[in-house]
Length: 142
Image (cartoon, rainbow, N blue to C red; front, side):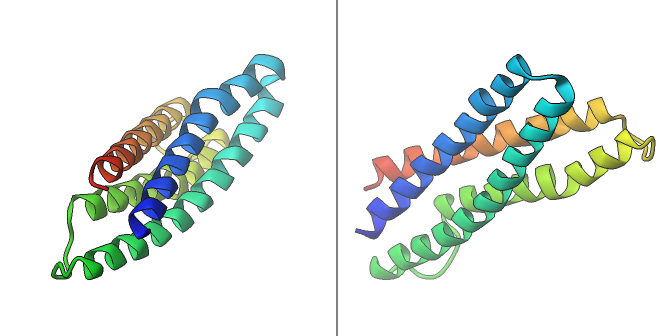
């Protein structure tokens, strides 16, 4: 049962990431002026980042319970590493880079908005890849 919960959570999380990154944000820029689309995308990414934190914590708890039921010694396995990687990409990609992007728009900071946006997009893509790998692993290990 817990394995199914973990698999469903990872799959839904991956779907949200793909939906926001490949559908939601690009669609906004296709139909709205850049300023409005940018604010809309920023809001979607803010909601996604906070949801990613919550899902990652829940998955860490569920994965720990799965390990305990299998009588595995406490430790870090590949699935936990993938969740921790997604946390790293979320925290760095959103909670570190987005404030730097706001500062760059105001003419502050060393890096340009474009450079920071590229880094943020790369971190988001890496997070999606890590979560996809997690969902794949959980599906095949059930």
